Amino acid sequence: MTEPAALDGWAGRVSDALELPGTAVDIGAVLDLARDTAHGVTRAAAPLTSYLVGVAVGRGAALPDAIATVQRCIEDQG
View 1 (cartoon, helix red, strand yellow):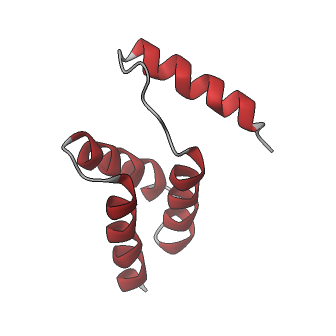
View 2 (spheres, rainbow, N blue to C red):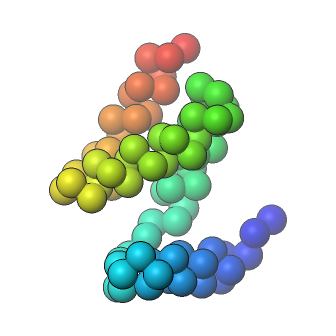
């Protein structure tokens, strides 16, 4: 299991490298989304979905709203 502190550190490091300092990341929500996508669609869809949600958030969508939209897509997949 990955230590939460390690993920926090990694998120901070990548945020700094991408010049996104101070960006708060809901790591649990992102990991849950990736898990649900991997199990509900296909494993390879998890990183792609995470990227697409990130684009949506970057364009102004709220993370919880974007995740809820994807969750509905996953449910419709079945």
